[in-house]
Length: 246
Length: 246
Image 1 (tube, rainbow over the protein chains, first blue to last red):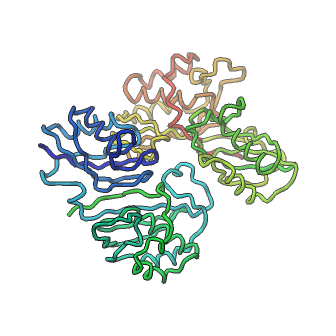
Image 2: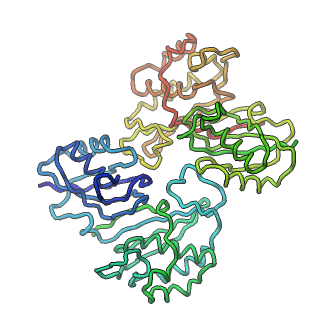
Image 3: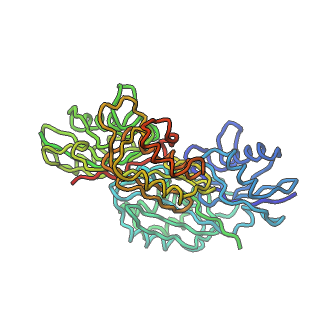
């Protein structure tokens, strides 16, 4: 078997997320597996590094799959791109080491959450940005982000009520930048729980709106109760930017 | 009556163009007039500078309308933006001179046509860029563009077979720039005939593909026969960037 790794971009708007579910649901993984079957005649399982939610986008998702034969990677990429719908693109594809697995080999990920804080509509980016449309106290949000950074039990920040494994994760950096009426929050970490970034974002926005104080956050983390954290920010604002490998 | 002028942005993908037609067709003008009725209670006619085709976008469309009373322009703009769908945005709105008319007062316009010439899919910009996906001889296209610039009878470059008025227009500049796998063609002129930019673009692309020589263009202009020019490039690649007023 030959192992192939690829970088995938997608506009997640019309999909039920990355992970293949029932046959009737439209998923990114499902679409790529369909394209692989069409192009190679092989039924492959495509492993994605991040199982992005319904409506979440990716610029740099990483995925791998195995084929029982070798094919020129450039040609395979071209044919896959032609077979895929125009909201999914393979940006690079190459042979990978035999034991490479997009999810298990990954050492970290970076996600970006985009929020329109200016009053001007941006009609062209509307599918990729949460259209909040009002100013936020970004300094208060930065102060709060410092409390979330580091290694913590993030039970308060996940929608998964049946966590069997540890909810301890390391958030290496939360960086907030303002540009052209938009606030971008870049989250870099070793891994994120289900909905964790959207709940962290919702919580930071409540702080930016003055509805919640940054100092509460340490208590919220310690409490390990989902209801103590803020609301889940909309999926459309979130994009998986990059997956890291050592 | 108070005259108001505004700058409008829209993603034209799902519309039958700017100009209001029958009541069942979705048009930008129709949507803005509906929003004005909802917000002000007045039936207004909205005059747009450029009557963009179905599927064509705008970043800087200019339009005006009259109200029988004065309202704070900022407040009116906010309420219109809330009443409008999220693919149409009013970017600025202010009182205008009594005799200002967005179309008749305009001295020129600039349109941008975007073509993806690189092999990489750009899934996020796919609605605004023609996905050609192969390289073009941009130098040959630049040479051809020099022939189209200037004052000519553009009968060969319009789909309007029943031109009652003159087809003479002045194209001040056609500028080609390449960036990130994309060719951008910016057309600046005093006015453009129906489909004129899309036919000029189709013709330039045929030259860039080597299917047609730049030297033919003078003959095509002189011939005044639509069939002599190239095909009509897809609407999705075209955006009205800016309208000029003296």
